[in-house]
Image (cartoon, rainbow, N blue to C red; front, side, top):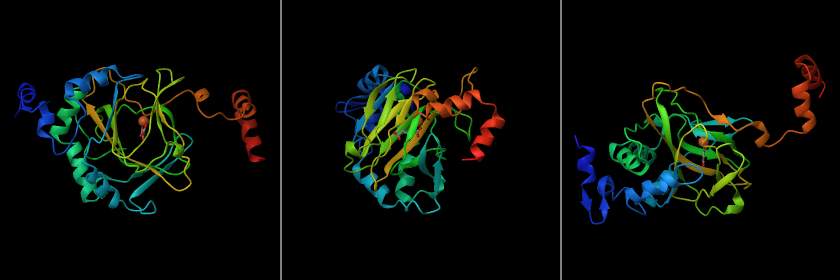
Length: 276
Ligand SMILES: O=C(O)CCC(=O)C(=O)O
Ligand SMILES: [Fe+2]
């Protein structure tokens, strides 16, 4: 087995470390030591935005094999906080999606992520729990939230989310931008356009709030491929699902309705609802 030291002393031209073994699979804009500095110092929380990380043909082949949203491989999630569709299962991926997911879960790619983020001992999730293709349809959105910190299948601690956007010719007017917020979710500090072959790697944390702006197109969906990376939970680790920002930062209900909810007894609220 190769040790961290062995990997760090491997060179191909100016490319060092594990990246030198993955040159036909990934294309980094800078050495991983520099990527690590960018990641660690990113505002409002550690993240990287990397354009053209993967060969564009790989992503194009994946798009081509995607079934329509009416296919029962898709699970549709529609609630007050999010409107999106996911693939039901990792074994439903087509051959190109399957290869891509396998690569993203390979030791080489995990080492690369560790070099760029400083988080060692990363474990992928070949089952793609909550990951894989994400489609936000026209009108869909994702309210401000911090990600679930646990993988539901394995109980592992989720540390990183990676999203590769698959939207050719995506114009800012189509909406669907990813927003990164400050640590009390009051201020958007960074906006990322979900353009084709742009990859976002972000640290998961209870205060790492982010959101997807509504997709404004009448016809186009916003597509991405998501993966999560984990470590074994620490001793005092407490599992939780997504944390949504306090409702006063979300799209507001009319004040009258909010006050009624706070002030009226449930029996009166139910009676009011039933006469609507
Ligand atoms: O698609 C994105 O840009 C972010 C999605 C997201 O926040 C999530 O799936 O938890
Ligand atoms: Fe998220």
